[in-house]
Image (cartoon, rainbow, N blue to C red; front, side, top):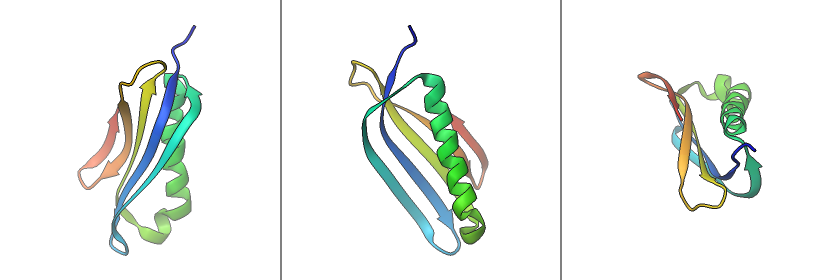
Length: 93
């Protein structure tokens, strides 16, 4: 059986000339149980949705999605980051 994880929060950090630094956090995914592969897909999908909806409007110089998760049955917290900043692409798992 594949290991499951709870999504704790998704944070979107951005920087643009128009809006400056912005951070948005979506907490409380306590009922969402995903496999590790699905966690990565959710982080990528979130990033893609922000790009599709807002990139041309705000022209981001930084856009980072941080998905915080815990293995089922533990209080440990880990995160996956995807996106880019002024120095280039970011991907941490």
